[in-house]
Length: 151
Image (cartoon, rainbow, N blue to C red; front, side, top):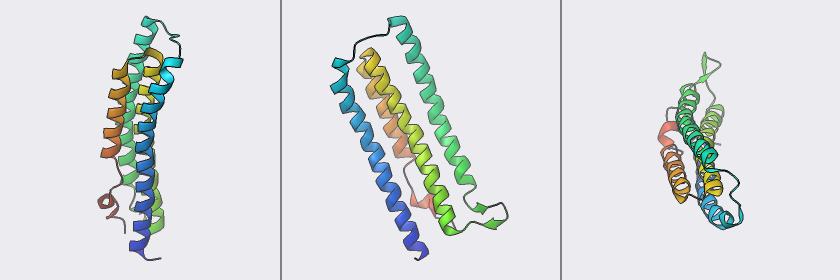
């Protein structure tokens, strides 16, 4: 398999994963609206306010961590054991891992919104955190230019 074909194949797989993860955010929206009427409010207002603040803070930390982890993993993409250049397939695997991990971290923010919506019935939490999650996933989408420095 040629280098160019291997790169294209890796990018195609990553784009399919990215689209599926973005679609899951839409599924969370639908599930939230379908399930919310059947989920009883079991959290008092004070506890919910604390949980809401905590999940928003954790969401912010998660988004920062997504960028940090991705940069950390991509920073070593051209190295293979520190001294020799990475084989092409190993570099593509590292890039794939970095993208999937950053997308999963971004998606978790949308899950926080779903949890808050189911517990508190505030649509703002659902839409805001799903929107932030989608924006972060678009920002961290698979990008062929990021893979171009790979030998």
